[in-house]
Length: 588
Image (cartoon, rainbow, N blue to C red):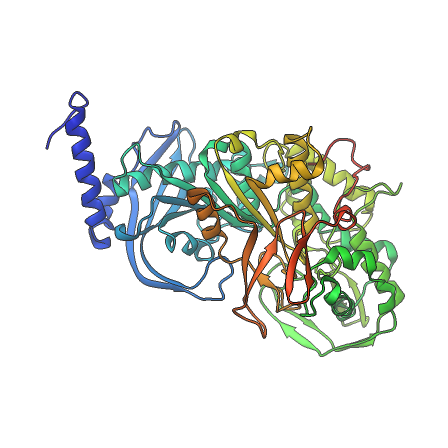
C-alpha cells in the first residue's frame, strides 16, 4: 500500500502492518547488514553527526547464557543480533564506534538500555549488555571515540604533554552517552517498526565509572530517561580520584608502611567484632555505622598475623595496574602504628589546620589504598603510589603522560589543593554532582542507587552525601524525614551490607548482592510497583542462593530474632554526615 501524509488513515494502516510484520519476523530476517542499514536513523537525525552506513556489521548470537551468580543480572538464556556501526562528528577527523544487542523480535518489550564502563573505560561489553537483552531491551554501548572498544579514555585524552584533548574529555564526561542513547532509541524504533505514539522505555545501568556516566545523563538530560540503576558512582571526580592517594600520604606522614597482611588482620578482626551488631551473626558487617560507634580498633593491637609468600600476575587489586607482583611470608603482631594508620584512613582527609576536606571508607572496608611494596634488597616495606590516584594527578592535573613515581613533598594540604583545583576545572565535565534533578523528576524518572557498604575503592559515604544533597536542594522547606520520604518516591539509595566495589566481597561471602535491580526498576517505572526494600541474593559462601532484602536509606537494618527490620537511627545516620569545613564552597 502506498501512502503519503495527505492520507493519514492509509499511513496508520501501513504502520500497523509494518509493525506486525516486524513482530512476526525472525532474528534471521532482521539481523542482516541490509536490514540494519535501511533502518538506521536519518543522516541528519542529530545535527553535526554523520552515520557511516558502510561501517554496519551484524551477526546473530544464539542461546547466550548468564550465570546465576552474575553480579548485575540473574541466570538467563537469550538470543540477539549484535549490530555495530560508526559515526563521525562533522568537521572533525574522528570515528565513534557503537554497539547494540537487539533481542529477537518476538522477545522485544519496547525497551532500550544504555550501559557504562569502569575506571577510564567507557565500555564494559559483556559485563553489562546481557542485562538488557534478557529483559527484552535493546542494549547499547559506546567506545567514546577513543579508538576502539578496548581503548580507554586515558589513552586518548592527552594530545601532548600539557595539552588535553578536550573533545575526548567531553565525550568521556557526558557527550558519548547522550549520542549513544539518541541514536540507539531511534534505531530501536526503526528496527522494530514502533509507531510514533508507542512508548519506548529508556533505561540506564552502570557501576563505578559507569555509575558516574549514568548520573551525567540524568543531571543533564532529565527527559531522556525513564529509569536508571546506578551503582557506586565515581562522581565528584577530582575528590574521588585524589583520595586514592590519601592512604599513601597517611602512611608517609606517620612514617609507617604496614605489610599488607597486617592491614588484612585489622580488617578481619573488625569484621569479627562488628558482625553481630546488627543482631545477626552471619560474618557480614551490615551496620558499619554501629561498628564505628562501638568498636575500639585499638583492641587489635598485639593480635598475631600470618600470610604465606605469594606470587601473582595480572590485575592486582592494590596496584590497580597490570604486572606481576610477589610478596614474602609475613608474620608478626599488629602494631600500634598500623592501627593508627587505619584510624587516620577511616577519618578521611583533613588539612593541616584539622578541617575536614573529604570523606573516606567505612569501618570494615578493606584497606586497598594502603598500598605498600616489599623491597627485597632492604627487607623492608615501602610506599607504593596508588595507580588510580597517581594517574589522575599525572593526566588531569599535571597533564603529562608519566604517572607519579613518588609522592615527595606531597602533604594533606597538597591533596586538598589538587581536589579543589580539579573541582574548579572539571565542574562541567567530570565532577557530575549537580544536585537539582527537577527536570528528571518532573519527567517521571526513577533511580535505584546502590553502593556496597564495604566498598574499598569509592567510599560509600560519597553516595550518601549526594543523596542528602539532592534531598536538601530539592526539598529545602521539609523536615528531614519529610524530605527523605518525598525523595524516596522517585530516587532511592541502598547500602549493600558487606559488599565490596560493584560486587561481592570475599571477606564477607554471606553478604547479599542486588543482581535484579533492572527488573525492580522496570516494575517501578512500567507498573508503578515502588520498592520498599531492594531484592538481593547471596551469590557466594555457604548461603549461596538465599534471598535477602536491603533497607532503603536512611533506614538501617536491625535483626530481631529471625526477622529483619528497617529502623530509623539518628545517631547512626549522623556518622555518615561530614562537614567539609576545609573546602571554601559547597561540595554536593
